[in-house]
Length: 149
Length: 149
DNA sequence: GCCTTGCGGTTTAATAATGCAACCACAATA
DNA sequence: TATTGTGGTTGCATTATTAAACCGCAAGGC
Image (cartoon, rainbow over the protein chains, first blue to last red):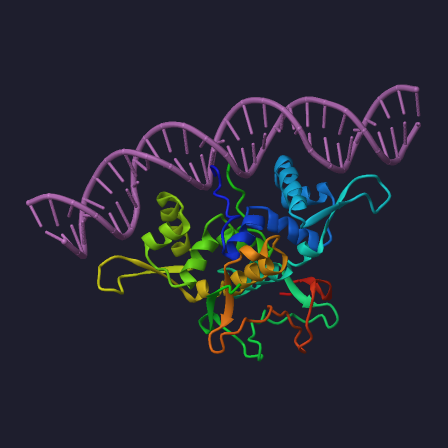
């Protein structure tokens, strides 16, 4: 990708997020972390990516405060990677990606999993964007405003 | 990237979405499209990416049904790129990315824009994930279930 | 204690993606 | 007519990603 134009200094929050997690593998690693995977080998087998890339990605996610390394959990003295609060904050992004696929994918029959409410076992609703008074908002009902002070 | 492991056949809807829009520029192009940009030159100047890359990205987005080319709009006979319904369906993903940045970014003072309700001019609420009965759901309140038939 | 296996990487070489700059045809403008 | 802008294409240099080999350490069996 050549110098991969960093978007860090960009004022757009979308660009800033993408700068942190917009690469090819990070969101998939995070998705796996939400499903409870924590070990290097688990991620590597699940995603099928090269180990050196996984090393780099995990390090970057730790550096950015999205994952932390914990000393152990099952006794064995290996490191484990777990989501921080900042990492758990990515949940809506994963849900949005999932729901877009569910709604618009060409072959929905190939989709293997459904996100369900743990208590009732029933599918969740679509993510809702609401105004302060509760009105449901679509793309056309919103505007961007420069941040004031 | 060497064969850039396509995720098309993957059963995970998150992976499928990322396969379509998970590259370095697509979501930024789409963000610009939501702000009303439609011409090749507009995207190029706004994003500062190489023209050949923009050509490839726009073509891919059109192929995937996210953008369409329309013949004109201001009279001049140049093509314009506009969002399809499938493309407008990406709105929650952009909002989720934005809100993650707003909540967790290291330097929130650098964020330049706020998403507001067009009617009232007031900031929108956080994206809400709800159960069918309306309960607000967090990551821990959900599970993945295999799709049944 | 010694051997084997698995885990968590690092290193190397090949290949694909990106970026930059130059170029080009056509449309619009002066 | 000349000049500029638009929307690309083409080549080349640079960087990212990959697969595969290698490597040290820990754990477990004997």
